View (cartoon, rainbow, N blue to C red):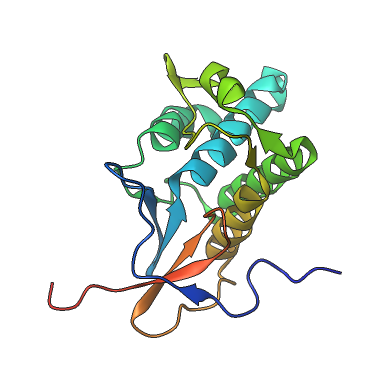
Length: 183
């Protein structure tokens, strides 16, 4: 049995960097903040969108039309922080967390994503999911991001070590990012 992606020691890094681009998506819920690798976040939220839009309209959550456009923007433009409150009530937010869980399961069944598949996966108008590099990528890091996002929503995400933020979903596993000092 493998360890939960929320358990075990985190590696510390001073920065996760891709030249010329940020690879971080800020996520907030209530009084908690964390970071998610933008490519993992993008494909996970794109899968949530695809799964809900594949449902017959009568089976989609009633609140879906109120958040879907914002989700599209957040999935491909990661410069904006996402507040997981989303204007939803607790029951609706739990439904949303379940949609994230289901999307993660679909990604794990898929296992990998190629640059060509990513380029064809349109999320916002003609904008595709975020994909870094040219080689196929393992989708397991998106599952780790899912676990953290749903734990944040459900209030079960453990606090990051003092002076750090969690960073979930990078290719080599969860890490911590030191908080900047002196503002």
